[in-house]
Amino acid sequence: MTRQLILATLLGVSASVAHAEVVSPTAVVANEYGEISTSLTGVAGDPVRGAEVMTSRSLGNCIACHQVTALEEFPFHGEVGPSLDGAGARWDEAAMRGIVVNAKAIFPESVMPSFYKVDGFTRPGDAFTGKAAPGALDPLLTAQDIEDVVAYLLTLTD
Amino acid sequence: MTGQTKRVVVAMAALALTASSLAVWADEDADLVVNGEIEMVVRTDAPAHLDGAVRTIYSGWVFRQDDTQAMQMDDFDNPGMLFAEQGQELFNTAMGANGESCASCHTNAEDLTRVRATYPKWDEAHGAVQTVEMQVQECQTESMGMAEAWGQNSQEMLNMTAYIASIGRGQVIDVAIDGPAQATWDAGKEIYYTRYGQLELSCANCHEQNYGNYIRADHLSQGQINGFPTYRLKNARLNGTHNRFRGCIRDTRGETFAIGSDEFIALELYVASRGNGLTVEGPSVRN
Image 1 (tube, each protein chain N blue to C red):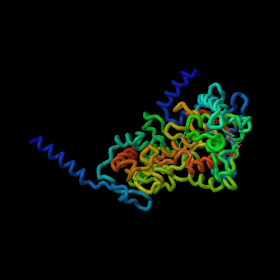
Image 2 (cartoon, rainbow over the protein chains, first blue to last red; image 1 turned 60 degrees about the horizontal axis):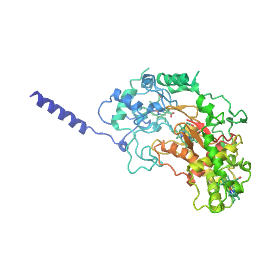
Image 3 (cartoon, rainbow over the protein chains, first blue to last red; image 1 turned 90 degrees about the vertical axis):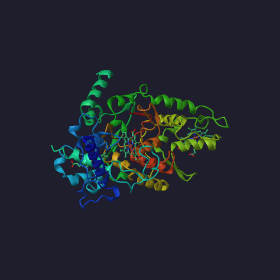
Image 4 (cartoon, rainbow over the protein chains, first blue to last red; image 1 turned 60 degrees about the vertical axis):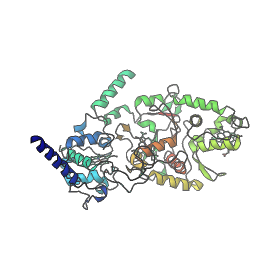
């Protein structure tokens, strides 16, 4: 009985995840300021996972360019972009999502990469091999990675 | 501080603090005199053709850590000089069908003192801009009767270019960008400002807008090539200019150009010209 209930709940959850519309990189809608008000997945972002995405070289590697005091246990923070301390107080969720998806829409010509973009590149490569990309590219981060990072950034209020 | 203590302190600093704190270990104001006699220009006014994009140009040596800087100050501590010596041996070794060495024609190596400082250079006979590597290959196939010239990135070529650079150390760089070389220079400039790869980064994004800043653990220089070929501690060998360009484009998650390609020849001319006024340092030491 209990077991059945758990099973039903599990099925229900996975069904709802599968049904939640993941917005593809080419379908993202931003307003004229580059802000994106709707979640890319419909699943709340996980800030703990967001911190992992920010510090991992193979994921966001955000600290390559940004200093973040709360992430000081991870060595080597870069100086190419501003410190993200307090970023959660400077930007609301829609703007933050806009920055992580495509910073160039908010900061024209920004050095910051567009993390949820799949076309319009010059000589795109096959990851870090130096060879040509074999086919369609995946975005640098998945939709849920972006939501997790946004959730983390919004915790940086001071 | 002993080398040992210093390493420990650096390691602790790296763990505890952000990379910017490591700037302590790069002496950006130091001057470079090699062997107590060759005075290098490691910072000077940018050439006029940069149109104010940067005001001062800096050798990559300026941005390296103290101990790396020190290695380049004395030939006994510079591992790159061992390869330059091997290049000198090759210069005097007979090769090819005619049994000649480079020295058979270039009897006085000192005649090649200005080579590193003035290449890439327009070659009238071939109607193209040539790198030092291409000129060496030309001598091998057209003058020495070698069926096959050394590869552009072969160990022999790296040793030879290290030797040719070493005899020109301290010479002020002055590559020509006008006249017949102009079109190639324009093409190189275009490449320098193109944002490549999935990260959409141009040479200028890192080396013009952000030199002096850290990107993760790397202290960004202006990406000058006056120190090439460079001996890198990272791979303990000589590294050629085009190979370096290749690595930097690869790091943008981009498709690189080939070593010796027209694109990299043009880029080399353009980047070399951004260093007009600095001095030849090759083989230099880098991390």
